[in-house]
Length: 101
Length: 167
Image 1: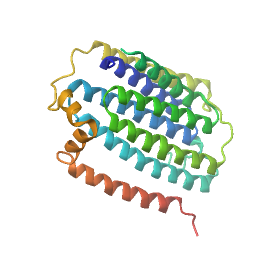
Image 2: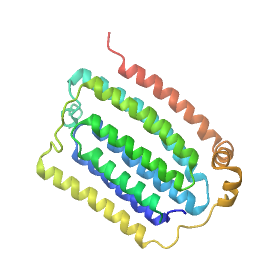
Image 3: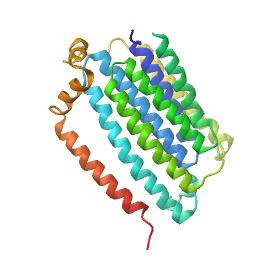
């Protein structure tokens, strides 16, 4: 028994919207980071659903690469957070306005 | 639609909502772990067993532990849910909801997903998901695969340089 592709895509859309809401609403950089991971996961879900629907493994290979890039992004992003926290003693995104025009 | 999919989907939705709506970042990270686990379950339902395992190992294992480390390193307490004021929160929520609605309408309105690929489900079932995936990854996408290792090396070195204390 396999779920219908359109339902998986709807779940993926809902998860992506929740992640986008997290990025827009929350101001803490770590929560924003977790919301971005949520959106990446929603994209992965859609890719796997399409891969099953279209009987092609390219979608699953893409998910693998997205996972690798997400791991790299986590390492760099959290290291950046630590570096910024050293300077500003804050991870509130509204405090990071040095490059703002 | 199967019962398992409905259950896992509901868990994923509730858990991802709680990631955004929880004030304590540690609790947020734990809800995120639940989201990742249920998405891994849906991967299994969709016939992507290898990716389900990788999802659990890389996301729920490595990335999440890393996030928890940083949360504890930065010693964050309870956080406000929407600091930019009610106006900004309202606009953000409306934008995100309309984004989800538009994508959902697009999914509902579509007719067919395009041409089918070369690897049939029966063929994948015969050799196994991991082996089928490996044969694609190490032939068609072998250059991208090798570049991934370069990317990860660069990320590790970059993370060490960035997080190192200034002497």
